[in-house]
Image: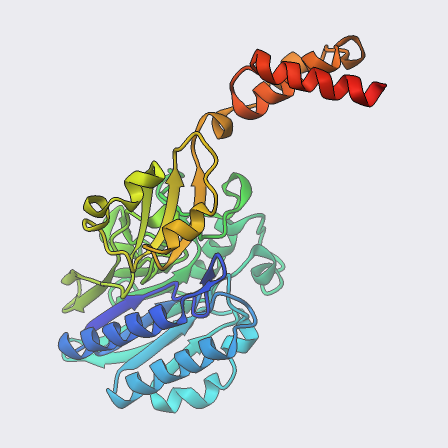
Length: 381
C-alpha cells in the first residue's frame, strides 16, 4: 500500500493581505500529479485543511475540487480536523462521503475512530484522532484524571485497545515532541505559552506510522516513521529557508515501512533580501533571484528614502513587506536609566536632544540646536 501524508493545507490563507489561493491551486495540482506518478492508494490529511474556522468560498471550492479529483483516481482519502478548522463544518456530509472512499473525522466522539483498509499483506488499521483539548476528552471519561494534553491523548489511546501485531497508523494534529525537547516552529503556527499543549511522542509507540500535522516544517521525530508532513507552501517569512516536500509511505508487511520525500516546487517562492536600496535595485543583484517571488525586503540606508516601497515594487512585483535596519531602528530606550529623571529639571533643549538621540541614535548637532532654540524662544515669547 502506498500512502501520501499531507497536513496543514491552510486553504484560503493570506499573507500580509496577499491571497495565496492561486499558489494553493498550483501546489494541489502538483500534488495530484505526484499521486498519479507514484500510484498512491491512500491520502492522509492530518488537519488544518482550512486557515480559518469559517473559510472563504474560494477555499471551500478548492478543497471540494481536490477531493473530486482524488475520487476520480479511486484514491481513498482520510481527513482529520486541526486547530484552525471548524470541527462541525469540516464534518459536514461525512456520513455520505464514506461510500465514495472519503473519511472525515472532524469531532472527537469519545472513541478513536478506525478505518480498516486491506492490501496483499492483510489489514491496515488507520486511526483518526482530530485535534482535541483536554476538556473535549474529559467529558467522555469522567472517572479519569485528565489535567493536560498528555493525559487526554494517553486516555484516548489506552481506551482504543490497539493490537500491536497489526499494521497500525495514526493521524494526529497536536504539538508532539520527544522527551520535552522543543522542535523548530514558524511564525505561521499557533503557539501556546509555556508548551502547555505538549505531548510526548512515546504515546504513539504502538503505531507503525504516525502521520502528524500542526508544525509547518516537515521533519521526522525520533525516527522516520514518526513525522510531521509540514505545510505544502511557505506561510511566513520565517520559513524562507524551509524545503517543502510530501512524504510517501510504502507500507509492506509488518515492520517493513519505506519513506520517500518528494519535493514540492511552488509557482512563487518566498525570499528575504537585505541591503541598501541602490544595491537591491542593481541589475547584477536582481538577475540572481526570481523577481516574481514573494519578497520581504530590509533596506539599510541611513537617509530617509521617498517611496522606497514603490521603487522596490517596480522590480519586485510581489514585495509584501519592507523594513529598515539602520541607526534609527536599532536604537532602544533604556527604561531603567530614565526612571529617576525628573523632566521638570531638564531644559527644553536638553530634553529634545535626548529624544532626538533616542529616535536617531545620533547627537543633535549645534546647527539644529540653534534652530530649535529659536523656535522654543519664539513660542515662549
